[in-house]
Image 1: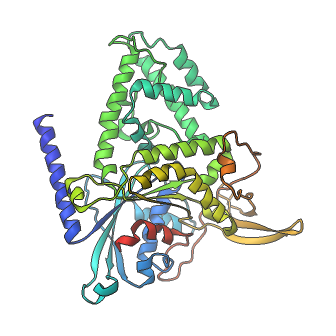
Image 2 (image 1 turned 180 degrees about the vertical axis):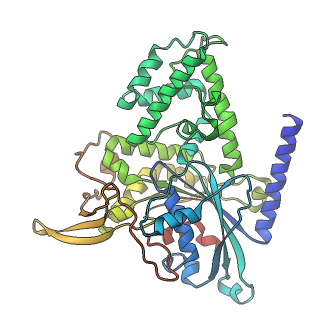
Image 3 (image 1 turned 135 degrees about the vertical axis):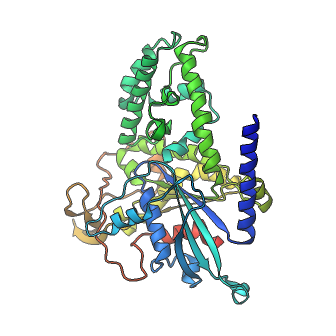
Length: 467
């Protein structure tokens, strides 16, 4: 390790020690990571959470609010000057305007600090005055989180696993044909390498559009300032361990290693490793509509996500030393407002089944996990109509594509989610149909944040013990 690297590491450790001491003795800081797979609603979740913590009329499920101990909540400048600020004001304006629209999705890491002035409970209530607790919300793309699973893999292993997993997917047929026909032992030809990586990127984009969850490397989908860089010019190829140093195979191998060291590890070090509470948002209804293979793929992806965490409680000493661990992880099935409330228990049971194996590993390591169904912003109303001699539970909202009001019954979720996840499970394509709703115009009373479903209970699990 060079002198500069040693100095940088010492400075990072000093910053962590200083921050830990400040947090322990003066103003506690909760670092909440928010991520999820594509179209899971990360931006809406953060926007609605912040709005409802500042205007707390709908947050009775958060104990400190119910007990009247939160005196104020306000936004402050974030402590990290090198990370983009989460554009809260723009997003809340989009959701609450006269013609509300969904805000743009997450494209990079962003952060927001919400500070709350909270009075103590119990015997300390009459002795100690209000204290300030900072909630630092870190928003980052789920695609980047999935990359953490690449850290312990060789290029050969990653290639074998990827090619095996995607070989039967129609979206991958073009790339699979190219990869199998390629002479990876031939001398590196840059235009050919770019052609292969472009073909693999086209597959990833098509797979994400189709709803597959395992779309890595994530920077191929969200390259940012790395667009066109050699570190993104690689693709999985059939194993060729006899390839020479100057071959296409070895070049791909070097670039995969560079992606691990220059892209994934800095993200882990600078952002992910500092998080102590985490929510993972999941569009279960979208996967359910796409069929059993999509659900199983989502289950495997969620297991990979949890394997990237270092779950377990953080003692004060280990916090000072910089070995912070994720203490609580919430898996939240979003868009619960697309179902009548009588179906919410089944949706919750399904997300619990999807993450059961992964959650058991986290609990074994000392982390507390939970799963629930939520809607960060409620876009529908409920109604019941008589149909064929029985009551049909429906939801009504404004369709995103047409702008017209519609009421529909998406289908009944099974009482036993294992029937959907069992090996060889099949069901009719029309068994469940999800709809895309536009945000509804809002008229908010003073003191009320945007309407939601169980956002207050999610907040209680994630941060309630620290308030």
